[in-house]
Image (cartoon, rainbow, N blue to C red; front, side, top):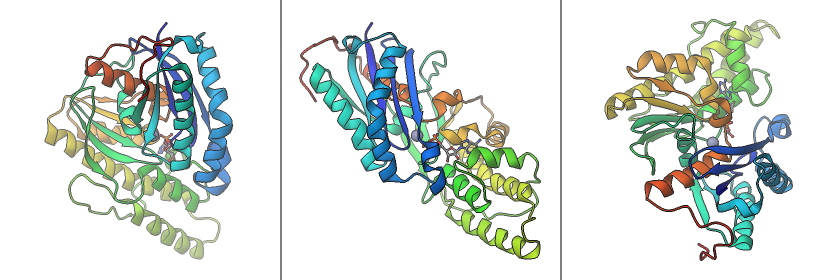
Length: 330
Ligand code: KG4
Ligand code: ZN
């Protein structure tokens, strides 16, 4: 068996996976640090780095064991190098470098965003560009134009908070736990999305801005609390707040898809789990919408292995000979 070992430590997931030389996931292990950061209502970079340090080796070992593989089966090591929290990235990169050096394997740097896009090419999804991709998570909000499996072009990005970050900050103001997106999604089901009007910043082009929303939530919660302490309609606020984020994302995604004449739209990142977001995008686009399963939407090592694998294949490169191939180190 010849596999690529993909390592991801850019934020608060320590992840490793083995991707086979025909685009299949042989194993994927994700250790999430959600609960570690929950008391702070967001990821604490230093805490994340230290936890990655504890987890990275066991997670890699578990990924190998899960596939019934050993280091002799690994033909290349792929690792997220950017974007992400610098200390967190350093842990994954150091582990990948050490392994690649010790085993004389090629080391493949992967852009995290390319990883999210490449997760769509893994089997059984096996999706073909061209498509428009909306990546929305706690760390990024981006619209991408994907023409081939070798890369992508950024069409728009957030000018301030990421969409998931906006969900998390809003949730904190509503007294909910971290991460807050899923809880807002749940609570909003019992609320009226038309109950309150939240301002959505009008940003030109295909960029986004969500930072004004949290001030609006803060003001609203304060005034509701003054009127009726401890009893404000949290479901209505959650539904109205969610509607504002969903509309901004859906409107620009539909516009990007129309402007680029694509045959389909893809969603990625943790926010892709949001029910109303999927429904609203599907309502606005005239082409199919694809959403990978949650385990591939959120950060994982398979997407990093996939980005390395598919860009190599796009360039017509051969699978590295593998075991102790004596390839020069990058
Ligand atoms: O991709 P992801 O797991 O990783 C990081 O950003 O690290 O995304 C996590 C983000 C969090 O901000 C979370 O609140 C948001 O995705 N999220 C959701 C939902 N599930 C997770 N946002 C809205 N609706 C959801 N159902
Ligand atoms: Zn991500």
